[in-house]
Every structure is written in structure tokens, then in C-alpha cells.
Length: 437
Ligand code: ATP
Ligand code: MG
Ligand code: MG
Ligand code: MG
Image (tube, rainbow, N blue to C red):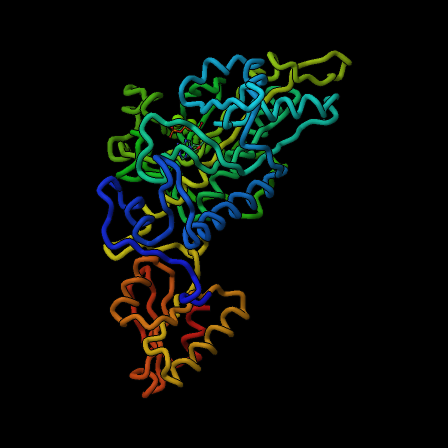
């Protein structure tokens, strides 16, 4: 991508209402623009990161055996009356009336809709187990939308739903998601800790929140130190095998959010291992049995031919919130420092003197070679001053910068800067290509 063609509207002044660094940087680096409170447009740079996060979430869902689909954002109130949640959900639900005076709503979550879909298409225990997911915009009319995309009103969520015959089988689905979540956040570059959690308005009896520790997090959390750096299962983990030991290893150590905090239990953790911190809820998994299937009559015929309601769970990831969590974890005073898997581009190529024949030629050669090798490049071919170019590249935080200019080329060198460490090195063009590849 040539920067001259891209749309990167940087902001000079940080708006006063942006209180935390991720919100400030997303605005300053031209990643999002607020449309109304808690509702954002995703500008090209931010949208690229969002898509990368989404793709990693998708790959790990697929690996765990979940099947992707897409449900609409607008739902009919009728289904929510069947489950009894239409009134219970309260003001957080955005209610809409269509031209025929039918009551509609912008989905804050999808248990009702997926239960209706599943009951229409499933007859027998032989059709189980199943896990279905989608990645779709949700709307919750949060009383205090804040911190940018961290607590938006419109936000992108991945939500998976599991369907099983028995509670025991359902627990296996729960474990699959538990492990998939560990892998997902790890691949994104985040350390997540599963914590015992309240089941909230969704209900049920087994629930974990996945928390990323951060000073700006809205959750107060308590956990055993060992959980933070515990190794995560590799890509070869067998999702059809026994995942209980992986889950057990974690759930046997103390970890709880505020609502579930039990001082006496926490004090059994050796004092040096007790961590009391703030955290960001990036995912939440629930097992809730027949909470929706029973009232909504989502049944299958069991082994004895009699109908039984299916056992269900739901599993959410805050895809757009993750972007805020990532910036909270990866930034410095000059801007973002994206980890490679989610960086909007891999390399920022800076031409210090567009119009200089040799600089233009080498930049174009770099660009063609890197793009040809599948490495995404943002090529700063604009006439801006060097200082402005450097500051802009630092702000948007691509993992590598390649700096090409007449002074370096006079001795046959270009400069490569690693954004994360800040390290700069002089290299020949071939070495530079190798270094960023
Ligand atoms: P919170 O406690 O932050 O309000 P929640 O418990 O209400 O979140 P869930 O119903 O568990 O949220 O939804 C699943 C995931 O969706 C959450 O773990 C979170 O990552 C994300 N999420 C929820 N609300 C928002 C929001 N307003 N903005 C962005 N992401 C959100
Ligand atoms: Mg909430
Ligand atoms: Mg919560
Ligand atoms: Mg939650």
C-alpha cells in the first residue's frame, strides 16, 4: 500500500474524553472515528487490525471444531418473549419498531436466535454434538460507554453456541472452548487468565471469564501468580482427546473476578503468589444447560426415543475490545507497537526523499520483493519532512521500519528499525530485506 493512496487521518490533539492510552492512540493514529457515543467507524488502519484479530479468532474456533455461520444483527422480540428475557434484559437492549409496528431489537447476544435455528433443524441425539459460531456486531446500550472500543455500544463479538445431549458431553464442549480461548489470546500476543466468574443475566452453573491483566482494566481480579505465565497448548492439541487435564491445571489454582472473590480461599494462596490486579474481560464462557432449550422447546429424541431438551453453552470473545486490550499491552510514549500477528502492515517503508532517483528505485524494488513474498508493506512515498515521517511511523507502530535516503545510499546502506525494541541498524539492501522477512 502506498501511503499517498491510503487514508490515514492522524489527529494532532488528543480529545479530552479519551482517558486511556488505547483510546487516545486509536484516535490519534486514525484507526477509528466516533459516530455517536460508543459507536465507531473503523478507518482503514484500524479495520486491518480488526480483521487480523477476527481471523485468528476464526482459525482457533475452526481448529476446535466449531462451524461458522452468520446471524443477523436485528432480531424479532418474539423469540425473547419465549425465553423470558425480553423484559428482563432491560435498558441495555436497543428496541426498535418497524413500519408495521412489530417489535424488533438489535441483538445484544444470540442465545434465543440460535436456539430457534437449532430446534428447527435438529431432531435426534444422532445430530449432536454441534458447535456453531458467528462473528457479528452486537449492540448494548451501555449506561456509560467509555474507553473507546473497550466499552462500546456497538461492538464486534465472536459468539459460539454448543449443543449436546448430556451435561457430561456439554462439559467436553466447554473444555474445547476453554482451550481454544487459551490458544486464541496467546496467538494474539496476550496473556490471558481464565477466572471463575459470575454467570450474570445469562445464567447457568459453570462460567469463566478470560482476563488480560492491565492497569486500565475495569475488572478487579485475584489470582495465583503461576497462572500468568503458564504455557499454552500448542497447535497440535487434540480437541477430540481428553482436555480435562489442561482445564484442571488452571482451575485448580485460585483465580476469580470481584463478584466471585472469596477472601478466605484467596488467603490459602502463598502470600508471594497472590496477585491482586485490574483486568480486561476479553472472553467469557458459560455452560447453562437447558436454560433456553427448555422454555423454547429445543429438543431432540434421546436413545429411548423420548424428547429431551438439549444442553447448551455459549462462548463469547470481544473481538473489537481486544484491539483496545492489545494497545494497552503494546505501546510506548511514541505510539503503538503492534505484535506481528495483528500488525496492520508488517513493514513501514520510508522514502526520505521521493524524487531522488536511486531512493525511488530501491524503495520500489523493496516494495515489489516484499509484497511478492506476501509481506505487507506501507510505503511512505509522500513528500512530508523526515521528522514527520518518523513520528507517523512510530505512532502507527508497524513492527519494522525500513528507511531509505540518499545519505545512507551513498555508502550503500539503509536503516532498519525494530519498533518493539527501538533498535536501529545499518544494513545493505539485501541484508535489510532478509532482516524484515
Ligand atoms: P462487561 O462485564 O465488560 O460488561 P459482559 O460480561 O457484559 O462484559 P458478555 O455478555 O460476557 O459481556 O459478552 C462476551 C464478551 O463481549 C465480553 O467478554 C467482552 O469481551 C465483550 N463485550 C461485552 N460488552 C462489550 C462492550 N460494551 N464493548 C466491547 N466489548 C464488549
Ligand atoms: Mg456488560
Ligand atoms: Mg462481565
Ligand atoms: Mg461476561
